[in-house]
Image (cartoon, rainbow, N blue to C red):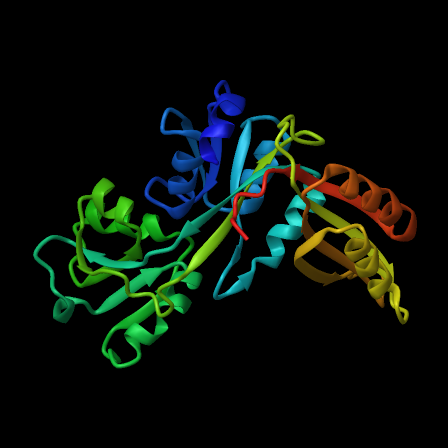
Length: 285
């Protein structure tokens, strides 16, 4: 799948990621675009999307949901607010590793710092290790970098294999995540209306509905009747409009004519209809 996109993205080198080199976003950027890229690091998703919106970077890589922890709801809101477009996706198997300065062992570790999601996904590993203090930080790889730059003993990071290689840390324990089959879905974003890719069999849509009986069911019936497969639905209340909700849905399809038919119907039935992206489905059903 990835090779099909490389020609399309070949001339686009400025790729934004949340985090720094060695992060999971970095891995996805390499796997999706190839390693000959200009990696642009941002410590927050909003800063990254703002720079994409201002055309300071060509593409951005954003985690959108995890198979064990669920959706990253604020990121849906950022895509909608800044009106950037989803032009691709990538599913990454997440492997968490405990790492520290070379020569350190598990018994030497007094504190572990990492992203809250990483700590959550590894909580069973630390249940019986009550002498280790867990601290939340913004990025997994950032802690690995801090350890090596400051020669910090007694401190460990939870991060990727790539982070251990880049920052020359020793992996004390591999695969400490509770759920071994742990995947995160990342979306590839661009500041344009829709993807130029000719490979389109998936779409991300956003629409609003009044809080009344049957409104959502009617939309779902349209999706079903038009032979589309609903792979994701996420609701979000409108803060300034009580009892009205925004819905973010992902749908896949075999025949683009079925999709275009459903889109035209939903556009009439729903309020504030918006296409967030039309792209290639990268996950085998």
